[in-house]
Length: 263
Ligand SMILES: [Zn+2]
Picture 1 (tube, rainbow, N blue to C red):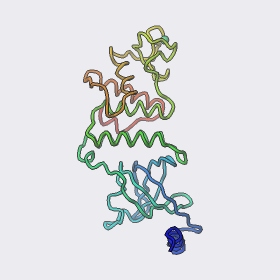
Picture 2 (tube, rainbow, N blue to C red):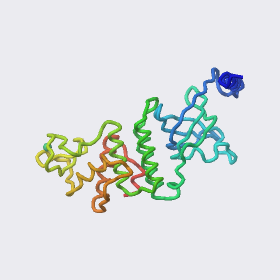
Picture 3 (cartoon, rainbow, N blue to C red):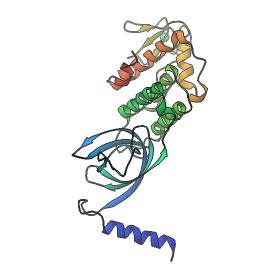
């Protein structure tokens, strides 16, 4: 038997014998994604929201997942990177098979890391669009979770993540030159509506004064790889995260709830 032909025939059989609740024609597709969150749906199901590199935010149904003996087990928990086989539905696709690509087990044992992962996932969820390729956003979230899995932690990692997220969605703040006049000197103010740091000449009402070293620290965090973040400075780390967070919140026009627990 020619393997490819056999496979096609078997897939055709599966399509023919698909449960009747799926309207014809039944289309099966493969996808993958990182689980962002899920919520109850009907009596025993959950809607699982994932970030797919190919399709952006996808909403899928995991049938029977709230039953004790669910065949999905814990494979659809938040943060898990999974491979999926889906029945395409009119509104929501139904998960028929799921296998774990990356589970991040070490990160899940550390409460601080879980909180940080929650922030990353919430921010990615806030900017992800449906039916839109989002490879850069997906890779950013994957790198962030891998950094946590590798034991990286602290507010600098979150700050770096949020600044990179702003870049991915096209609103990266100016950090090495004045957002208003382009000067490179005396960048000691920050304007959330003005798009980044301002020099002492352009500093306007509504901009905040940054303490010495903060502008350089933010610029370094925006540029650095998660595995090689600049030396942490406890005096300014909290303030740096506050600026990055407020900047992202300003441009998303919404609060990041998971960061509120760190206040
Ligand atoms: Zn200026």
